[in-house]
Length: 77
Image (cartoon, rainbow, N blue to C red):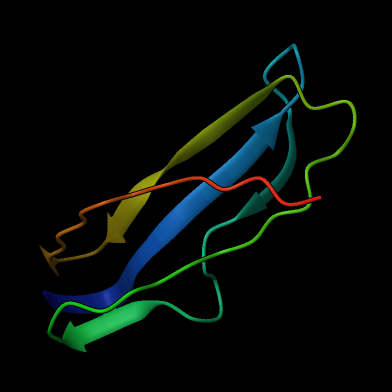
């Protein structure tokens, strides 16, 4: 990875049936930055009972290169 600017992040978002965002985590305070070797990252999100859909992914703001591999979602009670 070679990331500059605002950084890279895992993203997890819960939406209601009309597409309104109910909750989301995009590593706002813990962005991936700089040049790094492979490293494991994780995020958590409390899913509201009214959630209809989940959106998961990775994002890169500003410039650089971000690689992601073996992405998984684990539901925890």
